[in-house]
Image (tube, rainbow, N blue to C red; front, top):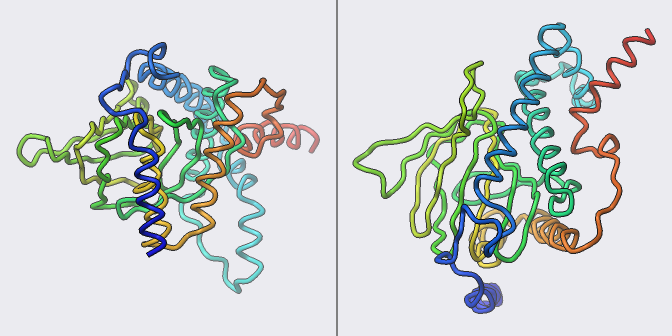
Length: 300
């Protein structure tokens, strides 16, 4: 009973906030700090830099060694309590995902140093039947940017129903197949990032879950995207974090992390810019580890 009252109280407290009708995806100087064009441009530039780094490591035949170095402590941990070492699935592909996500975060931080929170911790988010990785980059009562996706394949998932919010998913890696309720007939749409299988595009694939629409979707392995939403974000916490935490997985630690990291992002955006050496930030480790690898290689 207390849980029901908690949900009703949150819904009541958030009803009067920003409504989806006020969305302005192309106007960062209106009700919102960002525009969809800002998000797409930032992701596009990050993917170019990440792809250049991956191509260079591949040409130098170093990417497998760097990947082994990146996951070394994790592999040692696994080996410490197994007689036969479990097989890590596609270590190189996992590192490419880590590297690409790090470049996306770095590009956002460089372009919007005061607004982007780059010390957030990766956490799991459970909504619509998927358990996916989430990193909060920016959060306010009416806007958020998160880096979101999964290493594992996820089929037949549900988007959720958000009549109070307009959401865009800008592809970073992998593949998403989507079937929207308002789509014609039984057609589905495939979304992929700007750089996929060495094919370049002048755009970044972006899906739009408009208010009151819902979708079913599939995600391929190593699929990540930047989700950008405008509307009543506090109200979105109810189906997006609070209800799954209470009624589905009872992941109280994850629910606490969502609230903590969101508040940290909001507080940072209203403080003076702090000097931060990104080379000491674990969220960028996939990038700065490359320099450590080269320095170690030169010394040997």
